[in-house]
Structure formats: C-alpha cells, structure tokens
Length: 73
Image 1 (cartoon, rainbow, N blue to C red):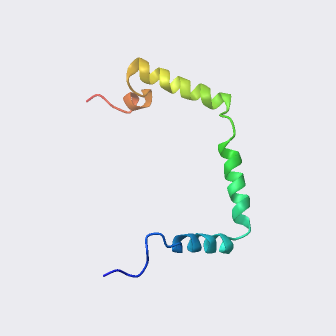
Image 2 (image 1 turned 135 degrees about the horizontal axis):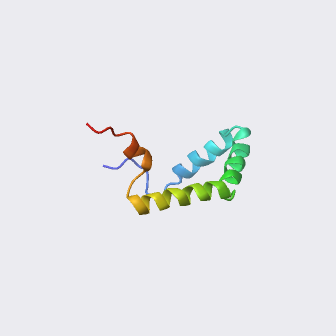
Image 3 (image 1 turned 60 degrees about the horizontal axis):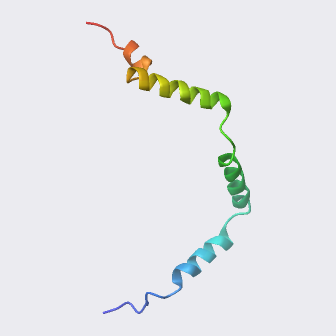
C-alpha cells in the first residue's frame, strides 16, 4: 500500500520554490544584514575580555563572582 508518491518525486522542490516566491521583499535585505554582522571581525576589547575570562578560569578554576556571592556561615 503506497501513497502513490515515489521517492524521487519533486514535491519538496516545488514547495521550496513556492516559499521563495512568497518571501517578502525585506527578507533578502535582512539576510544580507545578518551575513554582514556575522562576517565582522571580533573587536579587540571583546577579545581582551575573553582572554581575561580564560585566564581566570585557568588560574582559579572558577569565576571570581561565584566565590564572592557565598557567605560563610
């Protein structure tokens, strides 16, 4: 009992092309904006912050903020 649709049927291709034609005009611009942000280099200040966090994790095994929140008692 088969549904009459063969594995090589191009139905998914038709639905994808229909979705492309129904995509709003601003969608391509939004995609280009997203791609440009992703391709931007990481700012030096952010790299420095990541390096500091890596150094604190390597030296103490944890974040300083975690140990300061604990009160003895």
